[in-house]
Picture 1: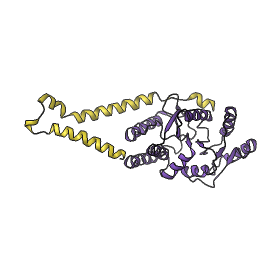
Picture 2: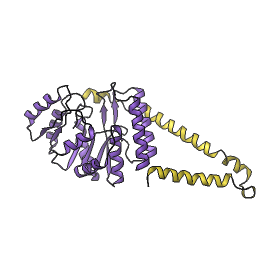
Picture 3: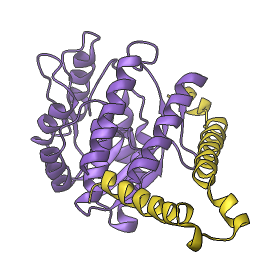
Picture 4: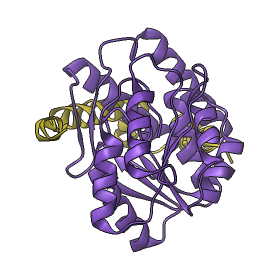
Length: 74
Length: 227
């Protein structure tokens, strides 16, 4: 399976689970407070991933070694 | 070894290192007609160390990295091949560490990494570092390749592994190095890593323009969709 297919599978799985809960018919709906948290969950996850990405790249950028000695050695 | 730009004395220092460490070696220098005197330096080294140790295999014009590997590999007689830039971006002092690492885990490939341990770069400004880190992060997320540095070229390969990979890999530029690791994983080869320092000698010219970034992204997405 290609990496693209793996991603699509994962997203489809999560997406359908979310859709089943969020778009369930009124009788089968989860309790209201849970539902309120559930509806914007994909957006929260996206934002959290974005923050994680920025933080990781930022941290690694800040800690990227400058090899002064290596340059001097050569 | 490829010599993208300038002559230095890497082979000289490589010779000294290898002699003192008791490693049986030969150095194959591929020079694509660089106008900076690489050939003269290499010829001098050939005289000093002998033509069984220094194999100068120049080509008439720039023909690309992949074909340079194939060209050089034809003359390699050993079981393992270390590929490095001969412009002193890569320090030969790391080669014994590559060999130690290889023996430690019997790896098929040992890849130098700028992103781990004491590894690092020299001569990059903040923007260059940001692009490098960003591209690396994106690659790690999309491909999960199991190696931290995918675009570096300082690596040790088992000879038959390199041969097999050369048959499979079709990308150009940075993506070529990336494809080597990704395909290696796909074929079930093992990859070890050694921190290295990369001293950029050619920074500032055409190395990282918008075109490079676009072709990198294209290559990344191609690998993402096909491997």
